[in-house]
Image (cartoon, rainbow, N blue to C red; front, top):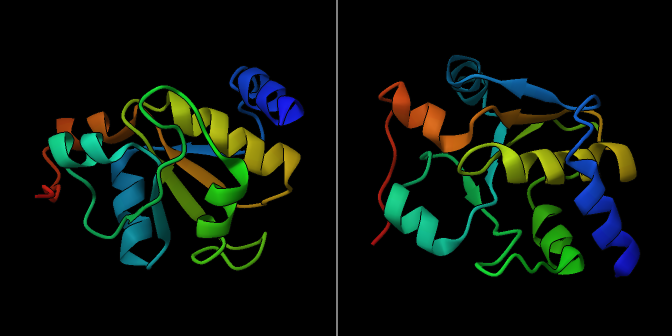
Length: 133
């Protein structure tokens, strides 16, 4: 577990192996049925809202803790192989940077995207979000 922690905490500084996209590009990908995975916390989903097609799989909890094995188990129900394209979404792009780097550099996923500046950029462009009850 410590080695995974080191990977996650140092991975945030190198974003070379996965691609940042803007809201317009994300919408084009959604229109082509790409899988969108929202890694924020349930309170964030409720407070800010979610992109309608997103799969909600919390990575970090409210205290910054995580369970990689559990998360990967849930993730693998949506992403079936390492060549399948998908987009990660968080609040501002920081958490998806960490998780995206981990998935691409350490686990070998080939088509990892993340929404630059997170759901905030989606909302800034007045794109629709679903509020959870």
